[in-house]
Amino acid sequence: MTLTFLGTGTSQGVPVITCNCEVCSSADPRDKRLRCSALLATRSGMNILFDIGPDFRQQMLRHHVDHLDAILITHAHRDHVGGLDDIRSFNYVQRCKMDIYLNSEARTAIERDYHYIFEPHVYPGLPEATLHTVDKPFVIANDINVTPIFAMHKDLPVLGFRIGPLAYITDANSIAPAELDKLSGLDVLVINALRREHHFSHFSLPEALDVIRAVAPQRAFLTHISHEMGRHADVSVTLPPNVQLAYDNLELTL
Image (cartoon, rainbow, N blue to C red; front, side):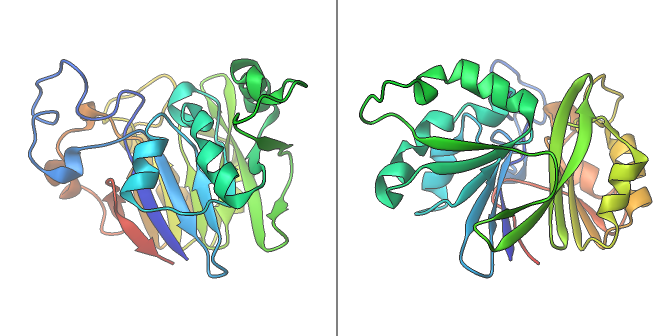
């Protein structure tokens, strides 16, 4: 399998509009971050997307993605679902609805915010999606086994996902011990780390490193990174050997 980081930034991305800090002014391409998303290409040729934020169109064009088989939604904040309208291109080419997997809270929000997709009157050319509410392990297209990881984003329930040796968790600040147990034996853990200082709804860098130590994956990659974290080059040298800051367009082979 191959995991491509399409975006590794926060809701504002990096650089942040109007900001002239050293990170937002950096010439290092690893400090340029679109909103958080990743694409998993499986051995069987499936493309599975983690979140569909407002940079979705740009990300699909940048990586020449010509088919998309399923979307896994961590939660329904706009920086993670704001690109949903642009699934229309895949609907048209693939001639089918898009399968989207999410929790009940995200389903309620999407059905409200994108109500025109789900209304009984069918308007030609609208996006088409089938929503699957997740509360236990599930299978995508009779091929890919997925284990949901239940976490909290302050007081909002969010989902992480484990597929084989990979787990992807973002916008969490609390994971119960029973859920951490689902992460044993990982090759790769992707987890959010907003900044070095504590935050009320996201893991900070020290908190993310605590989770990594508890889970003990072979490799860990930090995502959903704000400009407050510091420059990629400066932060990278402070991390444990098996931990890296992810960056846009990074590809991992699992």
